Length: 164
Picture 1: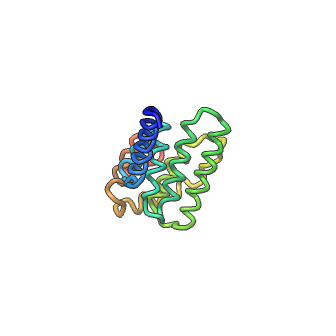
Picture 2: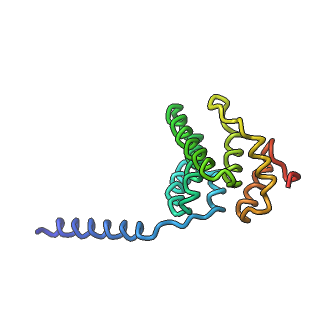
């Protein structure tokens, strides 16, 4: 074997080992980071967070994925892709809400998405219901979620800090 072939093979093995090592430790799901990305994420950070959501508790994973897919839809250029990602995300979030209708956090995510969804997707029918649930259960939510809700109130026409 010539030296170039040996070096190429060694480089390939090193690359494979390095990528296996990275994947051996899955990302940790962090709610505060999730909400930062929902607020102002880029296409790249949203895609990365979709990978991180795999580390979220299984019971909640589908709801987070759904919200991120709808966020991603708003960042895409092609209308056909935007619609496809939005539909996929909507199905996941609605499925998560059907499985756990008392999940206040998912009601908040749906409210935030509904408030900013384009009229063409006809995703606005649960705004008042979601607001009532979020307001009622606000104090029982984790700190990161409460912070995200209060932060969201600054630009919302539906939720206001005075509601809490």
